[in-house]
Amino acid sequence: MITNTLFNCSRLSFEEYHPFGTSSYRTGSMPLRYRYCGKERDEESGLYYYGMRYYISWLCRFVSVDSLKDKYPFYCSYQYAGNKPISFIDLDGLEPAEPKEEKKETEESKVQKKLAENSEKEIADGNADVHTETACYPSVWKRLLRAFEDIFGKDKAPSVFYVKDHIQTDKAGERWYPGGNTKFKILASSEYENPKWKNLPKEFRGKGLPGALEFAGLGILVDDIWSGELKPGAVLQMWTSQKDFEGIRDGKGFDKESNSFLSELLNLEDFGHSVIFLGYEKNVFGNISEIRYLDQYGENTVSKNSWKYPVIFGANLNQIEK
Image (tube, rainbow, N blue to C red; front, top):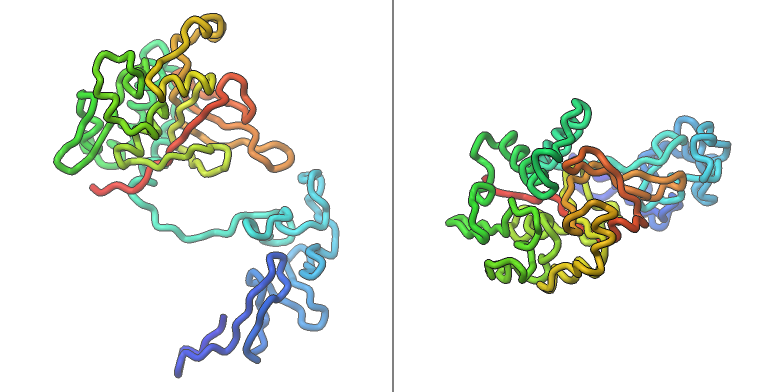
């Protein structure tokens, strides 16, 4: 949209587009050199100049073969933006890319970014394997606390990180359904001798630290982690079966007898696992196929159709006030 800002801000030209770049609505008589996605349009041919190739918007195709065709064998050599013009753009006629948006970095995004940076540094330095010192849940807890303190200073993380009671509500209204117990019974199991676990709303039970983060007002739950919504530094809770998750959620605990063989095979005492999300991996078709994560043993991966962890919940850190 072009406006006359010198005199009366009247609109001189306005245009809307179909997904692949043909004009769906246009008003105003002012000629425009740069139009769809800010690219230069040749008025005689109607082609858009993308640097490496010309684009035919009404055919949804480039006029010539992509010079990077061998890198993307799963795409047609003439396709535009990976055939996903709603989500992606084509920068120069070679590769699809996500549109860049300027976003203000919030305090919580700094913490999540710091958690991801610390995790990658542990892996690079060879210090990520801490299984002889701690289990999965406290390893995530300690790494998350460290990220907060790296940003805000020693002992300056939200106060819920420093209490050892099972339910905490402080003067600021912060709530926590806590960390430190590797059995997960405090997260929703009636087997735990302290009945305070029932204070945790049922929609958060069995979802581990991700559920605790949202309950405390520090995170946003993502039930479908394969949607691509997670960002590096998110936390995950994984279960080896839907039945075990439901048992914990409903306060019935694990079915230890039926799980005894699997427990021995996988060398697992319980069937939940807490980890830090490091990133998505994609297959040759550009679809998410697995995730990288950090646990007490170091860097690992799990595939989308994993038989080992078919139930996974996640949480991105959200905005906090300091």
